[in-house]
Image (cartoon, rainbow, N blue to C red):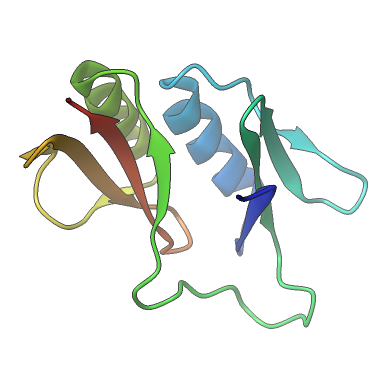
Length: 122
């Protein structure tokens, strides 16, 4: 259904460092900065990107918005969470763990965007 997801970031270098570590824990290659200064992560299943806002205003998180990344296992979700915390992220929601048939780990990235690693346990 989706071709890509792009979020706003106030410091693309900090965002790249954060996402290289967090997404790297899920097996995603490091991001690539394009000539416009945007950072792109490309996989077989889609594209995730970070950009400073085109209108020149500061990036802000969407209240109620969450971007979810698939994790192959609970251990991968935990590694994603640990890598994110070590690279400028902050924890939010409940601690990583099972919720019904899902294993979820939530973070806020350096710009405050809420993100999640999700593993389907069934």
